Image (tube, rainbow, N blue to C red; front, side, top):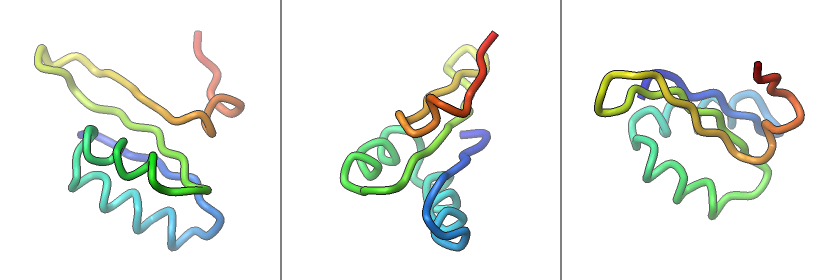
Length: 67
């Protein structure tokens, strides 16, 4: 895991979840996100070949501009 950005109703809540998700890793974080309401996340990680990859939840659809 290289980076996690979290959107939540309170900054402290977003920060806490972002820190936890950095520790949990992608798979466990996605499981956690499926159980939470009002939390969205954007993950940047390196795959087994060392290439950057991204995964994000639905809440980021309206704010991400992809080329």
